Length: 195
Image 1 (cartoon, rainbow, N blue to C red):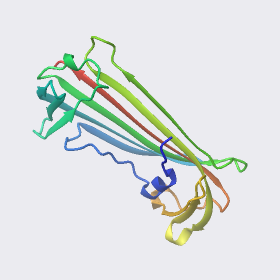
Image 2: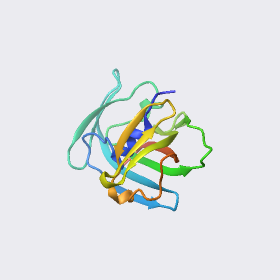
Image 3: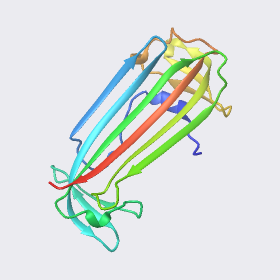
Image 4: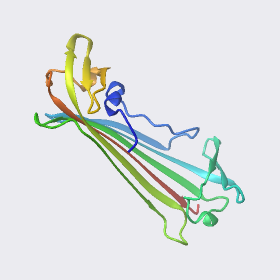
């Protein structure tokens, strides 16, 4: 399992995307609050057109509506590469969320990860959906309400002090010793279609 310090994401408290050189067709960000937690969600959709293909080296040149160009290496995991032709539309949809929820007091510090991927069937246009979910239970070690900072201890014993964005809240709903479940989810769906 890859090592990921989820509670460091707490410091960012925003959902962002590394979407490369392409302009986004649509992007949304939202925050959902409940009595016991908060979830930040972001989505982005990008579309580009296949400009050229280097079949031997499996490179595809893509351009978006604003003429931003990016070269993509379609590795061996891209099934049905031979189905891609110049002029095809490539759409990438990104989803990312981070959720913080009070865990039961007896919850043991823990971490876990689940991943999954599906690809297009043989003979179809290339496409894939991938999802990765990582979860940790961290313990509140200290709270500095005046400076909106929380000291958290992860399941591996590492401690980090993070700044909490005021839009999340004033930190009155947590106390030292509380357990917080932090779940980070990211998903990507890519499809190739005729224009």
